[in-house]
Length: 419
Image (cartoon, rainbow, N blue to C red; front, top):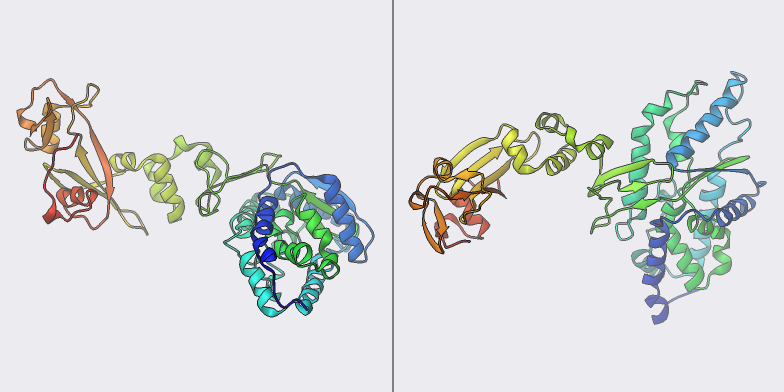
């Protein structure tokens, strides 16, 4: 019985956690030899003969290949079991029963406090209710922020594939998605197993999961059946934000070797067209978008200022400090922006003095020859620009909005020399 962890073992928790985070987010090509050895070993532990191994380039390709294979089997005889050739799904034998057995072995050999300490500092909490769907672990983010988003996109995409198989194979959506074991995206809880194995010395107790450790270190998702195992390449690219959420506004957040990809902003999955053809974003499409989070991304890509100008915003106040604009957003807080005149003239300015006066009034303050003066008193040949700043929806006047940008209340704000 392990009753305590040494300082050295404690110090190596971050080493194991970072190691498995690298596996979970790895974009290296799959190590097919290692992965296939792991599959054969997993079937041996499950007391099954080695299967035929079929490689696929992405989870969607794997699911499609599996389902098409099952559909072809079904075609031969309407009463024939769809699993005749592939055999039954053996996920329970390969993963669940083996994992629970290893968990029990570890539990018998470590004090409860150590179990929870490892869960808190290395991987995810390994509770019995989590075996079917891996639990969320924000600290590592491999499943919750990447794997689960991939599964979500597969489910979204499956409608265009699931009803199009020429062999007409009706089956519950559940089995296609959830017969999979998630390979590199099981890194969250496998990190715990590796800690007990390599750091705490429980080699024998964890040996039955060596196969899954090997697969997760070298490949992506796989579908284990009695006679056939479909297995996928690892991700080709993964982009995360500071919170380890999927994020990339310059391209795909996740991609696979066959070209299948996911677009996302701060963890929110985006329709492909938004990123691939952003020129098609328009105020009307933004306003029609039902999902508030996707709508915010569309506004960001389109440009808040442009959306304000072209999207039917309301002028709610004007004065020498600027103009205050408001655009109501369905099921979200409105966009409120203050339009301010740049006090320094610019050669390429879009506003003549007269146009600037018409917009901001003669009393607007500008910088001419190093001195602040009224806009109405500057020579006609100067050119100016205006710019927009987003402010809280609570701002009611341009002066209050400008004061907020200086971290002041309206009553505290006094116009100061700006350049």
